[in-house]
Image (cartoon, rainbow, N blue to C red; front, top):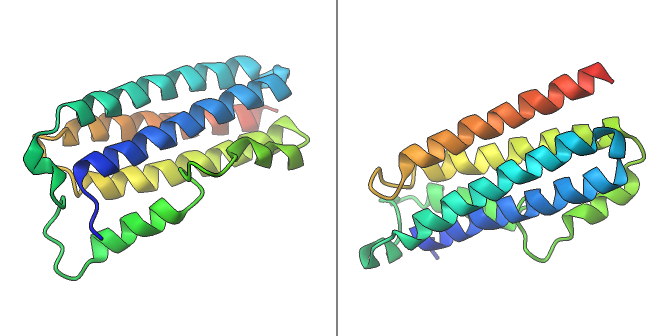
Length: 158
């Protein structure tokens, strides 16, 4: 079943909520990198609000499938991402912290989660019209790429 813009933005909001929870829990577990994780959590809160605003601005026609996709490839991609752990609302992303005993391990995990988010956003960017906020998705992708760089610098400094 094809996704529509409302559903895609709802998924994006969930990614950001999961990111907020992950970073806040990681900050609590690893105080030596807590400030960095709390800062990243706040950035994810802003992203969630951006997607919520984009979702509110959708018109009724945007509740229809979001792309001309005769072979269903874009829809398959979004479905794979939807089934993935990045934003599964039933998954407890912070449960994965239990197996991480060092700040380095959590930073490495965070880099992977950010990369997964970027992959999703790149996919939805192609499926969202300029009118629905494609440029805002570009901005969020740039910020998420920046998060990867921040995390990598911190990891390299430990």
